Each structure stands twice: as C-alpha cells, then as structure tokens.
Length: 502
Image 1 (tube, one colour):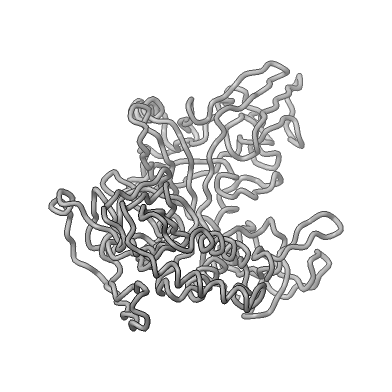
Image 2 (cartoon, helix red, strand yellow):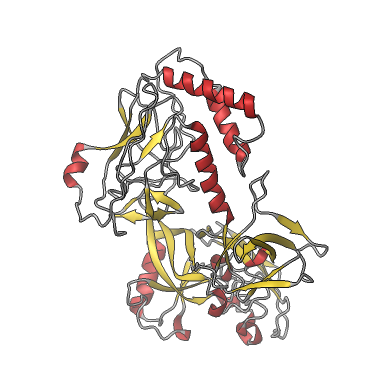
C-alpha cells in the first residue's frame, strides 16, 4: 500500500449534510487497484445512481435558490465570454445550466442528487487510475446545497488497520460570509483510501466552496485542461519538433523517449491543435523550451496516462482459406515461452510474472514497420498489470507482471513483406489488429520474419500473454492453473515519463 495512508476502511457509507439518512457508495467499474482484495475509490466516483444514491429527505431550499439566482445573473451579463472562456467551457456550461434550471423551489423534499463535480479534499500524492485517491476526509458538493461526506460503519471501524501517518496536509477553513450557504471547512488529507470501485477521468479538484460557483467550475476546467495537454514521447527514437506541420519544416528541438511534453489546446474545443498535411499525416502543436510552439507527428506522442488494452473476445483466422476461431479472453489467453528462455522461475525476484506481450499492448501507435524489440519501448514501464476475472466468482484479480520480452508473432497477414516465404507458399490471415494477440505471423521487419518461423502455424493460438520461462512441469502447471481459474479482461501498461531534458 502507498506510503502516507493511515488506514483502509471497509464497508463504506456516505451521508449528506442536508439528507436524513446514510447510504452506500457504489460503482460498477473498478480501477485495477486492490487492497486486501477490495478495489479503492478515486475522486471521480461521484456519479448519481452509479456511485451515489439518495440520502432520504432533503432539507435544503434557500441554497439552491440563491445559486440559481447568481448563475442566471452571470449568464445574462457574460453569455459566451469570461465566465466560461476557457477550453472545455461548453461541457462545463451545459452541465451547470441543466442543473440550475431543473427547479427553482423544492415542491417535495425527496433527495435528488446532482453531483457534477468530483470529490474534493482527496489525497493528491496517491493517484488511482489517473485520479487522486478518495480518503475519509473527502467531500462532494451537491447542486442542491448538501455536502456529501464519507462515514465509517461500526463493524468496519473496529476492524480498521491503523498505521503511522507519513504526511498530513491541512486546508484552512473558508470564512463564513453567507451563513445560508454551506461551506467546506478545514479538513486533512492522506488519512484513508476509500474501498469500492469507480469510473475513470477526474478533474483532480481539491479545494473551493460550492457557493463560489465560478471558481469551482474554473478550477475543474483548468485541471481537466492540464490532463488533456499532458503527453509523453513514445517514438522509439529521438522525437523532432519542427517549426511547421510538415517533414520539410525546420528542426527546432529534440526529445528522447519518455520525456513529457505539453500540447497546445484549442481555446474553443479544448482539444489538441491538429493539422493534416498534404500527404495525410497528422501533426500536433506542442510547447518546447517554455512557451515556444512547434509541431510533432501525432503518432510519436501519447496522452500521459495508463495504456489499457482489452483483447477481442473472438478472432477469425484463415490458413490457406480454412477458417477457425480463437478466443483471446475466455480461451487460451496465456502460453508458455519454453525453450527460448533460460529463466528457471516463472517470476522475477520481486514476485512479478515474467511475460511477453504484443507491441500494441505496450504502444497503441506502434507501426507495422517496427522490429518488435524491447529497445523500442523504453518510454514504457517494464512493470505492468493483467486484470483477470475469477471464473467462479466473477471477481477481479490483479496479476502483477514484468515485461521480459515482446511478442513478435502478433501480425495479421502472411506473406506481407516477409523475407522468408514457405515453399510451397502459405497464406494466413487473422481478422484482428496487429500487435495484440498471437497469430503465428511475425512482424515483417522482425528477426523472426527472416527465418522459417516467419509464419509459425503451430503457434496460432490467440494468446495475449506469454510467460517467459523454461518449459518444466512446475511452470506448466502454474500457467494451466491460471488459464483454468481465470479469464483475461484487460492489460494495463504505464508510461515511463521523465521531465523534458532539452
């Protein structure tokens, strides 16, 4: 478990400052981070009916009425400018307007949750699925005036594991200027990650009060823009920044694999600025050396976030016209590398499984002209995760892996530029994206494409993970046990991002 977290809480409920009852925090999608077998929640788990359900009767009236009045005056005075004059303004504006025009007064007191903003006062030092971890101090504002807080059930409190708190950060209370408006007073962070599940994409919002509607929205939009603009170099070589969106543009800067880079966002759409040249190649505008702007080919950079690959459920394969079906998730999703590896154990010294995966599991933009060498993926962490589903219980389990090698036999067509051709020729076609599952076809520029196993029909198995170890009874039993007990849901790879060095 990450340092700086005091204790983990099981059996989580929440309460609203304006509600009359407590209710559970729920979610239908996990983030792939488990503690004692249970997934942890992040700041983005705030959606009504998915993560949060009603809190009985609502006691709030004046707060919503006042918020609506202020917002209406703001729209009237600054429609189209200022208030939402930043990237992503359209989405934020639509969300606020739809909520504020719902009701002017409560005709009934039943709780009708409206929580468009993420949880505040989260643990910014510990990210889960790209968003700060939820703690016992986290709070979530409702449009109707309530403040949702996390509470601990009695049974869970007695079983909580207390550890030394490594670091605590205090947020000063906000002065009470308008008594009728609920405020978020001083709280501390880093005390307890919340157990549950959730959805992805967070603003990482941390401070502010709901009465200051403009500031809250601006903070959320600013944080969202920061995520949108954060990319990293995944070119497999030196990345060249040019002064024009074309290969004929003058070189103005260079970056190595894994270096972070900021892209320029369009002020209207909030998306990266893109230009397509005459040859159909897409270029993205970036910042370099501070605020200077240049252009890079889009295929060489990726958003600075985990790479998640969900293999296809079925793949059709045709060998000399004879069709068969592979099942990369439910069937033989794993294989054993065998003779080409000298690792006696199936795991490394840290307990992670030694594996090989296809190039596009690591880099979704990996070109078909690549050699499928490990050296081409230095921008990505070697440690990765495979999320498995228990066939009996349906529960998720995380398989901690270490990328020992890259699976070259994951191409989808033979012959297709391969140097070695069978005699008589064979034709093999797999209806799947290159670089994901084992098709038996080597990448045309890989070492394998120059040998007799350029098209290894005996390896057309649809596996996604290959265990890199010797073929012995112990390793074989472990792989077969994993295949029989679990199905493969997805693989998560993390970028190896460093600060720009140029």
